[in-house]
Amino acid sequence: MAKLPNEKYFEYFQTICNIEHASYYPQKIIPALKKLILELGYQPKIDAQHNLFFKIPASRGYEKRPSVLLQAHTDMVFVSKKNSKNKNVKIQVNGDKLSANGTSLGADNGIGVSYILAIAADHKIRHPELEILLTWNEEVTPQGITKFNYHLIKSRYMINLDNEDLAKVEIGCAGVKRYLISCSLPDSTSLHHDNTYTQMAFTIAGLKGGHSGANIGALRANAIALMFNILYAYALETNDFGIAFNEIINPANVIPSSSSIDLLLPKQKINQFKQFVRNRVCQYQKFFRDENPIKYTFLPISKKQKYFNLKDEINQKLLCSLGNVPNPVPYYNEQFQMYEVSYNWFQFTPTKTGFTIGISVRATNENGFALLVQQMLGILRLANLNPHIISRAESSLTWTPVFKKHTDSFPLLTIYQNAFKKITKNNVISEICKGGLECGFIVNKIPTMQAISIGPDIFEPHSVDENSSIKSIRLCYKIILQTLKKIN
Image 1: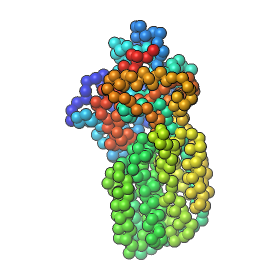
Image 2 (image 1 turned 90 degrees about the vertical axis):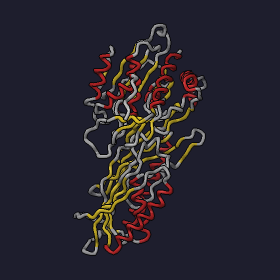
Image 3 (image 1 turned 45 degrees about the vertical axis):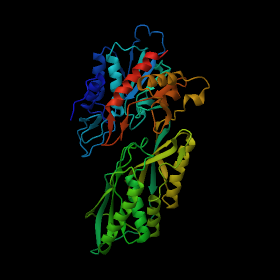
Image 4 (image 1 turned 135 degrees about the horizontal axis):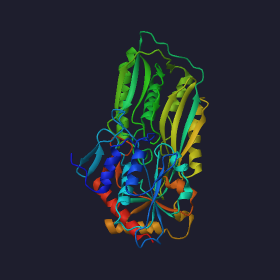
C-alpha cells in the first residue's frame, strides 16, 4: 500500500483517524482537536455538547468582506467487519483510492474537519474572517447542533463541508425524524416442539448496507425487511412452522446489512425451507442490482423460548404486516431529482408484551413525515398490533433552497459556481440533498443565512466499503480556497 500524500489536510486526516471519534465517544477526539487548535494560535470555545467554535481573522485586505461560517462534524459512523472494540481507523491507499482496513473510513466528515484545520494552519491563504463550527454527534442525534449558541454566529454565508459528491453543490436538504413504534402482540398460540421439530437460526448477512440518505434509492436490500418478506412468502406456501424474534439494532442512518430470526421447523420440511430461501434469494439478487451476493445461513440451535405458531391466524396477520412494509422510497420529485419521502427500518426489538420498531424518515415537508408514519401505523393496525409512537426525535430540519424563499440573487452559490468552473473547467450541479444536513438547523435559526454544502467524492459512506478519491479531495480543497478568495 502507498503512503498518504503529503498535503496538510491529509496529515490532519491521519491524525483524526488515529484517535477514536465514533459517535458517542468524544472523550479523546475533542481534547485532541482543542490541543491542535490552540497550537495553531486560536482560542476554541467548547460547549457542554462538545461543539467547538473559533474564529480565524481575515487576511490583510479582506477585513471588510463578509465573514463566512465553515462547518463540519467531528464524529463518524464506525462500522467494523469484526465488531471491533478498538474504534481507530487504519487508512489504506491504493492508487487514487483512500479506504480503511476492515472498518468504515470516516471521510464523512473527517475530510471536512481536516480541510478546516489545514486552512487554519496556512496563513498565506486569502480569505475573509472565518467562523469555524465543528459539531459533535451529527451522525446519531441533533443534540450538538440544536444546543449550540447561535448568537455566536455573525456570518451570513455558510459553507458546510459534509457533502459526498464533488460534482454537486447542495442548496437544500430533506429533514430527518426518527421514530420508535411500540406494538403489542394479541394473545395467540405457541408452537410446542417435540422431536419432530428442529430449532434453527436463520440469518441474512453480507449486504452492502450504506447511508440511509445517499444510498436509500439504490437497488439495495434492507436486511430486516428482506428477512420478514422471505418468511411471509414462505408462510403463503405452508404455515407449519414457528418464529421467535431476535433483537436487531443498527444506527438509524445505516441501512441494515444483516438480520437474524429463530425458527421452529418440522424436520421433514427443513430441506424444503432451505430450497425456498435459495430460490427466493436468487429472485432478490436479480432485483437488487446494486447489492452484494446475499449470504444466508441455517444454524441448529437449542433455546427455551416461545415460538409463534404460524397456523394461528393472528400470527399470520403479524407476519403479513412485517413482511409488507412500505417501499423505502414511495415518492420521488422529478423536478429536484430527490426523494420527497424515504425511510430506513433500522431496529426491531422484542419486548415482554410485543416488540418495538425503529424507523428513520426523511422528507421535504411535514406532510411527508405524516404520510409515511401513517402508512406504517396503518399496516401494523391491520394485524391488531395496537401500534403507537413512543419516541420521536428530529435529527435534521428541512432546509428549503434560498431561491424558493427569496426573489433576490444567491451570491454565495454564484461565487462557488465560478470557483468550481475555474478549478475543474466544468459546471457544478445544484441539487437538494437526499439526506439531512446541519445547514437545516442553522438556516432555520438564522433565516438570512445563505448556505451551500460541498465535499469530495465519498463512496459507500457508513459501511466497511467506504472510500474516497484522492484526486477529488485535492480538487475540493482548491475549490474551497478559490471560493473564499472571491467572497465579497
